[in-house]
Length: 236
Image 1 (tube, helix red, strand yellow):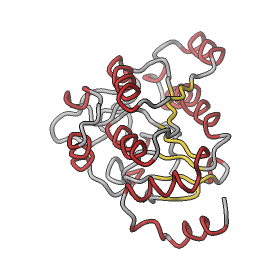
Image 2 (image 1 turned 60 degrees about the vertical axis):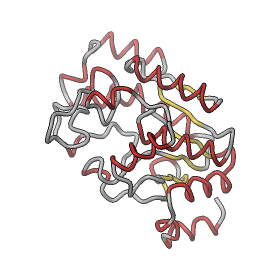
Image 3 (image 1 turned 180 degrees about the vertical axis):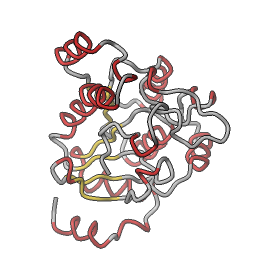
C-alpha cells in the first residue's frame, strides 16, 4: 500500500464518497489485489453489480462452509451466469472438519459459544485467512445498522486483524431498504430467502427467519446475545 492511500484512509477522505465511487476507486487502486468476500446476501450481490459495471472481470470469492442453504448456491449460479464472473470458492480443510465432527458432533454449535466459534473458525475464518493472504485489500458488504458490533464500521479502514491490508465497506452507511431498492432497480439476482423473512443469511442450521419487530440479525445464532453475534470474519 502506498503512502497516499494510507494518508487518505487516516484522514477519512473516502468517507464522503458514494458506494459506487468507492468501488471504482478500489478496483483502480488495487486491481487484481482486491477481491469481494461474498456470502451472496443482498449487500454482496449489489456490490457485484457495481463491480461488474466498473470492471468486467472483478475478483470475487466465497466461503463454502458445507452447511449453506440450497438457495445460496442457486443465487451463486445465477450471478455467475448473468455477470459472466468467476467465483473463487474457498472450502474448509477436510481434516479439520472431520476431527471436529468426530469429537463434538455435527450440531456442536448449539451446545456452547466456544463450540460455535470453533465451528466458525474451521469452516469460515481459516478459509478467509487463506483467501486474504495474497491480497492488498478486500471488499465486504458490512453496514453499520446491521448489528451493534458494526455500528462504527468505516467505509475504508486498515484491517489490523489481517496483516494491515485495506478493508473496504462501500455500503457502510446504506440501510436495508436502500440495498433492496438498488438490487430490484438493477434487476440483480438475489437470494429468495430474503423474501421469506431472512435479511441476513449464513449457514442453514445457524440462520432462521426474523420475526416481526426483531432486529436485522436476530435470525443469526438466535440462541446467543446480540453482542456475541460475530463469527470472527469481522472482528471490528
